[in-house]
Length: 309
Image (tube, rainbow, N blue to C red; front, side):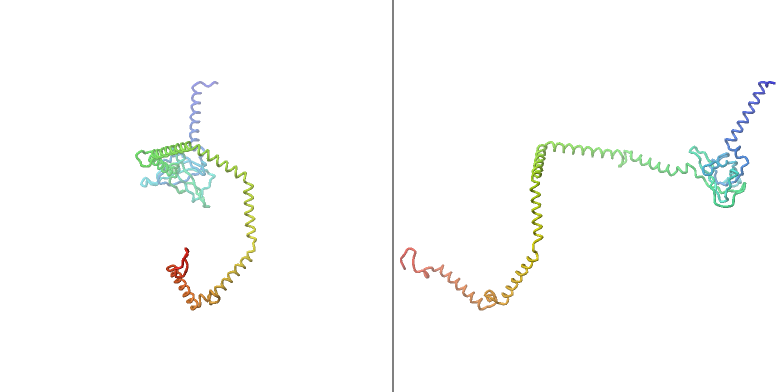
């Protein structure tokens, strides 16, 4: 018997509603977590955590938030969060659970941090809750640094500040203008002295060619200097030093004889009688010369022109 149109519509509506409910429960995780044990965590502030938010362990979804309520309305600073966890998971008693932001859009969740205790939690047993360590809190220091960076950038582009990018660019422009002027002056100087510079280069080239041509003579001169140095090094230095020592000894002997009054010079230096006689003789000869110059006729008895007086 064929179904009439109304029955078909009713059946289709029931199937659609059932599929919608199943899909909704699946999306919330209720369908998958039915039969999983529940645990309790106490927080001072759940910070937008809501029912059906995910519970993660090492980034893997292991459960969902089942219920959020106050422990006691007289103490609103204590909020109890009941969550489910995979029934195959053994949670140590010293484990902790922390509120976290799961996306930059503000979605929240719980992160389970496993402890090391050998004792495990039983169903509906309490686990220590930690405050939020969300994505926005992690971004906080970065946002502060970015804010400081923006302030510095604004200061850099502020024309009213003594140190800004416009002043720096102006200094750079002035430096470039000065550099261009210097280069232009150098170019003019080189251009005006181009002929002497060219002549100097020609002379330098001639000198280089002449040196190249005289290379053999230069090498021969260097070799001669080396030969002379070698011969000087090979000279009988010991014999020269012996002769020098002998000459010094003879000079010392002469000086010793002089000091002892030996020889004519020594007696002259040491014998006062001889010295006085020689001094008297010299004085007499000096007086004689003076008198001769004063009275030449007294000593010469003839005239150049003849006639004795």
